[in-house]
Image (cartoon, rainbow, N blue to C red):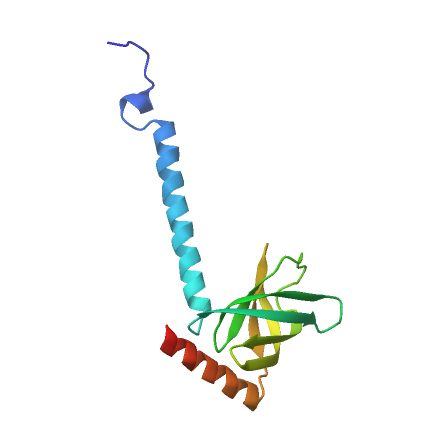
Length: 144
């Protein structure tokens, strides 16, 4: 049998190493649940996968980029891009994208920016664009 000295904590089954690992796992799980809850709370509309190209121009003219629309909802979309985006949340943009036979030109606002893309919230959609978007969502819903 291997003999070594044990600290009081180890002897009592409360080694600091064990405590830290257990604490770290609980902490990670709490953070994961908070993140999931946050994502669920923010999204008000069902997202639908699409494959379309978009051109996005920052309203103040400081940036123009092209990317792929990966998903769309009545409320917004996510665009993946190779461009190095330096957009603050709330930046106003104008975007144009085509899905199936419909062309969408609308104003939007950046919601969140990631390394390879950004999420946008549509803003002030005119009646025609809103009808086209709702029709597209209905088609995507029926396909899925």
